[in-house]
Length: 79
Length: 189
Image (cartoon, rainbow over all chains, first blue to last red; front, side, top):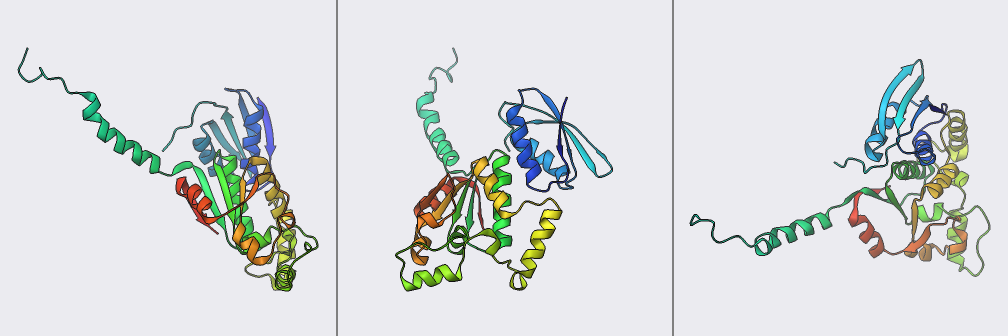
């Protein structure tokens, strides 16, 4: 699984990086991101809900947040 | 055959009216994937807030239109000499409202530029993007920049004095209203 390091950067850069990452990956591909921005924990959830990509799992070890995401290309669920 | 169902309802007439009014209502609803921001302020902290929201939204798949007016227009000038052929009052506006991200004051704790410098250092130390970086990201993520023609005219700001931005256009209030009325969210900063 590809891993991307988003540690040490703050809002809104981690989200901007996420949007760049999914553009270069294939549909259904899973990847992991590591971040230290505390806002990222909830931001990654909200970002996945908005964009329709699947948040497979999330964990935290010390200050490092880890999220596994599956790239989805279908239309995101709308409110 | 029963008496009640021998006249079939005509779907064309029965559903046409509710369908039409439903479509009208849907058309008038704001698009949750569109964001309009009015950037009225020219202070650095408010510019930062506007660009953080704009780039965050664009990175979340939203179409973002940023409308710059008044001090927001003046804050988006390049850091360089004024254009030629201005009136004295227009020149004065230019002197009082210099371009360049590092010249924009904070709305609080600026202390004649000291607070600004301290803030810039802290932001760099803590991995928070500065205004120039955010403008660059806005460019990349496709945030559209609309600059109020009237405020440019009022302060004598020439098009070539504004920052280079591929998706920048000048606009009037009607254009803003058209876009904002179709966007699910409109912010005034």
